[in-house]
Image 1 (spheres, rainbow, N blue to C red):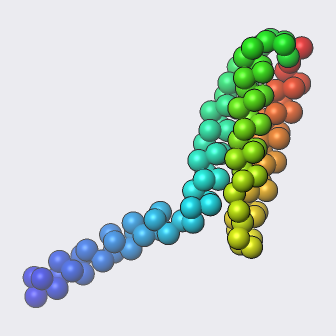
Image 2: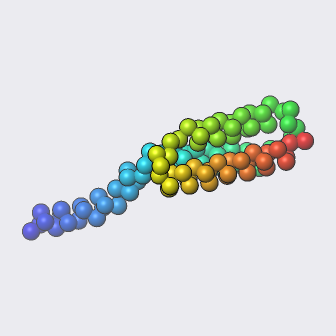
Image 3: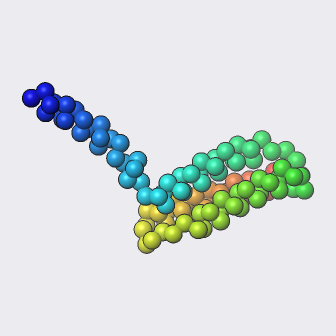
Length: 104
């Protein structure tokens, strides 16, 4: 009986850990890219300078690389992946536009 209780107590926690490992690798890559984009956006928000500044060009290049990374993610015909990728691309484009507006 004690063994049954242990097994029963183990199952729920096992089920809780499943979703993270069940996330598709494509979605994980998109989440990773968005994490990086979020950090870059903070730098964009703090940016003061000209479009010719090295820091401006670096931010622009890193954001562009994230777009290329998203571009390389295959959707495999999965709508959820396609939608997540599309939203991420729009998000990064918005950050790039914000950077352009700040560059003098």
